[in-house]
Image (cartoon, rainbow, N blue to C red; front, side, top):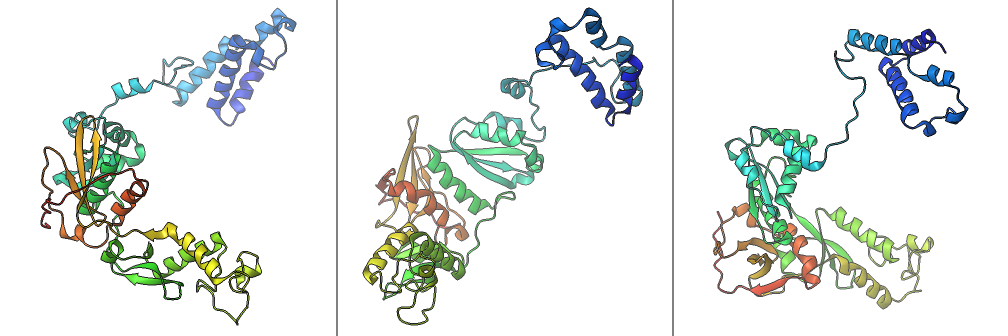
Length: 376
């Protein structure tokens, strides 16, 4: 192909810039990595062929001039610029912090566990989060283009250190409930809750329960927002464990000894048809429901969960699974909380604490003389 034909091919291509890039790339790769190009062994090419394969200088100049005229390429820009991605340390050093955020509040962030609060105009709480490394997590927010609105509204960043991840999780749940930040998911509104209870015959039933009963009553299984959600959870247990939908009350029997739907598709083990005894089925039902059991508060009074970090000892105060605050050498009294945050069952705190509690991972101590604060 002569120079004119190659020029015509470049000009007739749908993407003019793409054609120029192809020409440059092809010839650069011929020069630097001839073994990767499908043009045959270099030894088989004559000097005349090699000279012909070079990109004509006149063609390069003409293409570049036309790019400048079209405004695609600024004048004086080099033909090709190859730059490796900058390392993270360089990007951090050259990062320009948002000017509307108080710089001192960013510089003060520690590289330890705790909770951070993005505050806007008039100190409005915008977002509450937690991390085991406060500084790293907050800087990630500032670099995230998807959170541009949050960053643009922020005026300063507040933080509260904790001795560990457990304390950070408890404090975060508490602050989200108390402050109701603009960009956090809204906490659950107080409403009727349902659970699964066993009838006198041992059949699980969906029942409405007062929130305070979840930390006190025995034999409650699961916390659900509606009766339907409770029934769906029971249905899932029946399917997973091969239980009988008639014996569990999910399906009406059409007559004594009639098979339930699960038995017809060989999922049920036959409690409905007498192939499995009532006692055996009930034992398997209780084993399946254990994963939903709500453990009532097992202590007489308030307990403290001790968490330590680098010589700092912090005590997280818990009563009936509700987080009341944390104490240390500098904070010897609990601060009052809004009355609305202290009502009902604290499901978030329960979920945070119950697993390490059951695994025996908590350092628990009674706090008999602790004075509880009045509600704000």
